[in-house]
Length: 497
Image 1: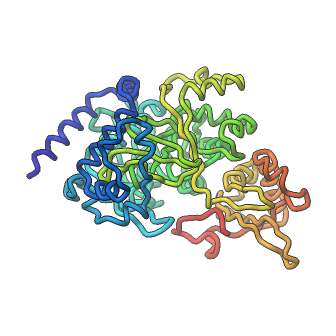
Image 2: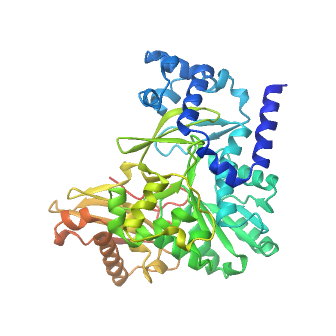
């Protein structure tokens, strides 16, 4: 028996259960995130064998790291230079894998799957991110709530992690009940229809395209989603505010700042940040004002915008990409996740919006916290270059979410730059039709026109770099589940080189 492990669990769980959400989110105003991160570094440098060897290789003596400036000179950690070079136990504290009680597996979308051990106390840290959403957005502290886990179950990180965090909220006293159909469509419909009316609200948690697909198929099968007071928690993909409005309308959710929220998460360290009513309000304003968005973010696409607790995950920016430091089963110091993005302080954000005549707090009744913002575009290799302009899947997505067109398509597409027989480049968009919808020349033309309209509106590079005669995309329509472009059960990629 490990008595230290036992005491660690008791102390952390008691702190989680007895500390109100607001007190936890305000803690960073009393404790310096920089000092907290330096303490984490020294703890990791003292207790993690792999990190000790890593520092030694670079000739770094931990005692010399005393200031934030010192810290920012530390080498970045990556999967290649750190995680894959050392045995799994050596990446854990004291070289003991048994100090972790569960192991998850990353998706392996960019390479070999990676094992990520963690302990119960690591989940409690992440449960606070779920608490922000369930408390501030869904008022689940006072409403009987059924949480339906639609993430894939098994060794992959999403389903089990989400399930555990939601159960921790129930332990804290939330009237929250969890059920885990995973991504089994039939089971999701069954549990919602048989249990949904026993609760005041039903929360669907899953990947955005999967949740939309479930909702659309449910409507086709006669499910009246409105009667269940549906809320939604998303993770894994950037989506547009048009998409949020569309999906919300189909379940009868008419308060977008409070009816859904997205998590910015990674298998490497759980949830790093989450959407809040405030961040959603801001993002919806920016979606309607592309010039303001370009000024703020420096790009012609709208990123995921979330708030984060700098005591939980300490972010930095390196050459336009994000780093973070945080404790976990495998503690990570200046870990480079290769996500393109940046940081904006709470005060800087509000000052910027005021210059554009917008006060996001004016329309919100709760869920406003003085926390910094992180924005995330995703990885740069998910773009295509056309006449020197970067074309982003997010731009095309908005075109498919226009009225009428949204009823024809699933939302999946493949964006490519191709050449015709004369070797002239053209922009190709292969679009998946919704079940039961047949292709036609009229649909092709309407979809191409809608995509072009949104590219011109949202992407200044597209509008200015590309000759007019090459701007209209060539649209190809494919049936649902097309084996070449949209195979069932395979993680979808929106671009091809």
